[in-house]
Length: 389
Image (cartoon, rainbow, N blue to C red; front, side):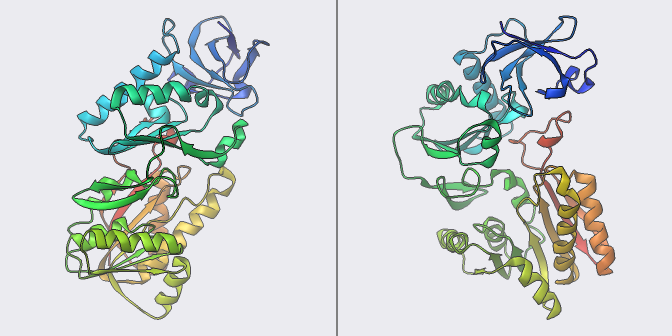
């Protein structure tokens, strides 16, 4: 087998199970290795580390798939891994909609598979996993007999791997607008035009966490996208809910989702949420609950401080819109901002707003997106509810 030899001094991160091997950790790489090949990774003195896929031009030239010397990387390997991922989801209560494969957390680096009823969406974000797409599709077909499979490889990170961005059918064509059920509610999901893979499955449990604080409340939701938090709030007994998003198409889908569930106590407005929060705080408008679910503020370590400033600013504005004793529901999906830093940012906003906080809930993404403590990027979503006095 083709071989990659590591430097004499290597990080404990590799020994302790992290699947990424960076270019500066490699001493020698076989000249015959081509992008996408599977290679054996060994220490400087020949001790086996694992097997992984290789892209010599990537900033992360090797991503490990197995630590078992006798394990072969073939279609049967991917079938086993996807089946094991599905067994895990079923054991923790996911049977209909879920993230079926969460990349490194399921031992398949840079592969995402989302399950929406009998439809599946695939993202393969590195060349080494993209070359196995046919085998991955065949494994899904064998395990699930799906109604359709779609790829959402329209993500910029693929270009760093020398891959083109694309999306389209990996099965016979089907209507990419499908309806799913979540927490007893119905939502339309657009697998083709929706953000990411069409829907944010990671907030399922967090949407349920608001059920008690919204009863009888006037609720404002900023960055609402297709209205999932807002519709949950309306369903859970809010007096009135207003959702804001800059996207006209997202607002139209929010209205459709509200209609699907027969809810008349929520409305939606296409507006720049940043500007609205600022203006309305000047006008001294007040709500009982303010919910903030903005997009990621940075994917670059160089811009972490700018992202922190952004989160502080919107949460400060959100707090100013709350009645005393009201509740702030706030999220961050920026994986470079770890939970402690996020909470510190919210506390700094409270200090500037001259408000005090009482934590109600602080949690991560739903467990179909499992967290590995050794892989920082798997602990990416922060979800916080605080009472603001």
